[in-house]
Image 1 (cartoon, rainbow, N blue to C red):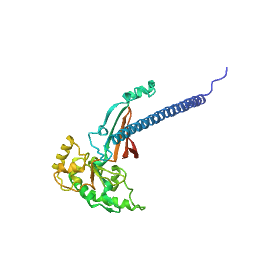
Image 2 (tube, rainbow, N blue to C red):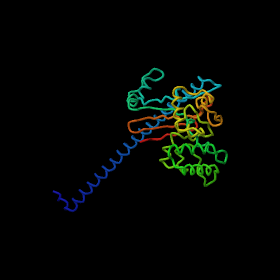
Image 3 (cartoon, one colour):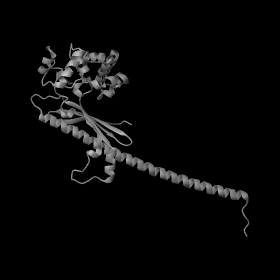
Image 4 (tube, helix red, strand yellow):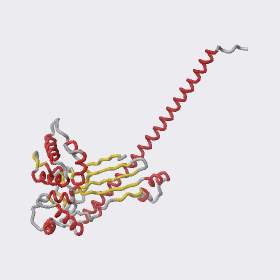
Length: 316
């Protein structure tokens, strides 16, 4: 009979075996982790790709509505107001209600139907010319006095410090110079924080201001009480509230119709209108693990529409 190995050798062999098992287990766990991670990444990428396609569909839906609105109106006297179909938001609804069947009549797969039951889609179209346009503050390389006055009245009505308007205008003038040290010219209101607006002020101003690629007129049919007050010289907040209440019963088909209700003559042809060229389209998908939102700036000239920019963000 072969004698047993000494105790130290048997202990070393047992330790080596245990280390080998631990090493193999570590490799196996690592491989499983990598596999699980790859599956999760692939699933997330697939979900994001689906979300992009769905949000593109929401944008196309809005563009069709805006195009049809332009075609159905009077081309010689176009009018946009809040009683039109584009102004009705798409309330949150299950995706399954939109994808009950494919265009060729075939049903979706079981997997698609399950996802469609879990995903909620909503959207809205907003008239950005119902707001004060930050771009109007500049007239060439100088500040536009009338626009600055309108923004001063808006800041006052909303309780935003005048010093922040001064920072904003100086920032715009600096961005206009386009040198190496200049800030970038903003394209969206969220970017105005880089020109001096605080987050709280920006949140307060956001429903009433826009940043558009060119100078624009204020649409009297869609402007808020504060924007009407700020943009029309001599108008009080109470009068602006009265005008909005009257507008809910009947929109204004022309500037003359508005001035009749106003009760006095004010030169508005250079600063106001009753129609719009720039709209913001928002599409939102609420999915099991995240909420994805896409905002798009759409420019409409007659029945011709183009997307100026698109911005997608994850809200959680």
